[in-house]
Image (cartoon, rainbow, N blue to C red; front, side):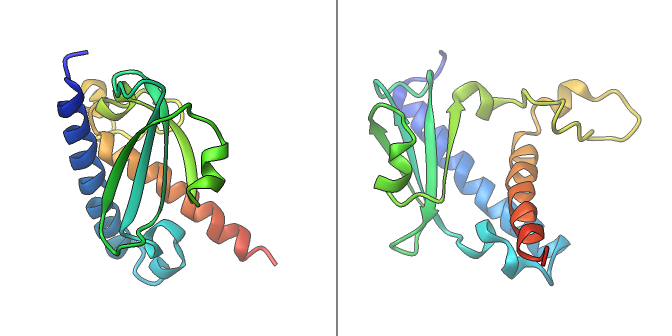
Length: 152
């Protein structure tokens, strides 16, 4: 609740801009031979669409992305009832729920228990390694698609 609407929008813009840069660098460094097979990597830069009922980013909503039609990173904030129909309407690759809290800190340690320093209690630090955990989530999606495509 500390963020005004404008501050929230600026945070989202910078967060996703940095997320794309970090994701791209991570994939290029760790998976140079597979990078072109990763869907998210192959469609960078993206356009992101954030949907909230009342335009308040402090509440929950849905966001989606698609490969950029202009060839540039872009974010759009829309006041719309978040629904799965938006996927088809905007030709989005993905649609996920979001909350500002989920972008400010990691809340899903059961699924992404990656420690900052192995065998040392760094839970407070780990809680704020948000971009790293977002990279892992999107990388996991790309890996699932890659494994599925190569099952046969």
